[in-house]
Image: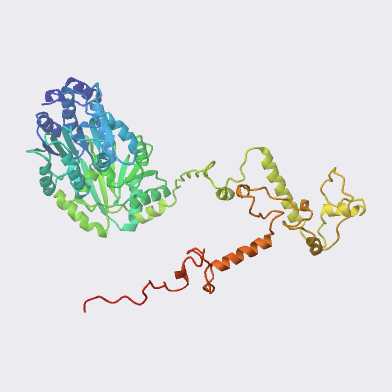
Length: 592
């Protein structure tokens, strides 16, 4: 078998491979594809960059092409699980490229960091293949927007990471929802015996395909180690990236904040780079990967998010700024270079605290990594880095404050745009107000030197008899000829008539009659003129209130027609509750 045509794939797939320039299958593809076409479960172990994606995608597409029927609603025929969003996107793109000559192929990508409603709408009609990360897949299953009862293929890429402690609980929720009659495929570059035993629980009599020894690196990767103090790592990285042999480099850190710190310090010495890690949004991560693929930036700083399956062509160097504490991660990191039979360099910076991690890595690889000393005149070269021109990044524009409805008057009063109004009239008013303020500041001095109010000066210049009593314009209505009442206010108040008096009622405005007053019977006296006065009505109410709430009992005999409700309504308010008829305490009937 020397070409893809000997693998008995369908004609549309062979045509797509020819268009992509694939002529000779890799060893993992030669051994895995025939067993998958027979319907066997498989566990494939091979180095990174050896074509594992095509090893499971081509037989899957061949099965869908030969058994062509409409996928179920809210379901799929094949499920591919990946540990990271970037790997899921890469797998989906590869599947679409291999099946571009298939007429009705539908592939959906499901991962977090993007709106879920779009994915729900995309899954509602059914898809042939779903490529997903475990977290978002479980979220869709909980919402009942997806069903897995019709799955025919279950494929786990980077199976060792999927079976690790971070994903084992998710897999235990997903696998029981799948039908028992299915085909399961596991592919990874590393396979620890304990994880291999655990993976056997999800497969049925799997075929193990191991092209190279497990946990091995690519042969064309040149590995190096430099022992350096932790504070000097940044200077060593800067000098290494300025080497002309470094065309495109990938720098790995152990923490997210460490990746951002490396990007910031590289910008200070004039090296443009971008970071990709779990704290970045999906749009930021895709933007960084796209800029790195299109050669807009030379350096990409990443955590282990990018260590799994990301295929970026042309990476010449991989720098381990901090070596991983998990030995298997080292294999995946350096596997980003020397892909597709190309050569590459993997350089690790090790400080005193990381020597134990290095020992575990060499034990896993069963080899000793050669050590490279620091460059000559390292101190002088590190000082020269500070003289380089830094990269000044443009500041992001500030978000404008909210306008329109929903903004309270208090916020609008103190908002920065309170002076921004349409029209030139507002600006003119502001300028005139500023001019007046500057003139007032210039004219400050002693009280005797300050000019008087111009309105007062104009009034003093006129004779007293000629100037008006007020600055307001006079009304056209003639003034009354009645003499002014010069009596004191207390004497004038005695002339006011009360509501019940027979005096001049026109001196006080009467209130409009209310509905209650209109419904009153004419026999009852009213408080309006002609009835009892306000003082009399008040005295009567006070007397009735005192009689009703008095604490003293009525000593006189009660009238014959008195009702039981006369007197205090609730006597217990003023003391103890009165005893019941019969008096005395109740006898204690408790048995002694």
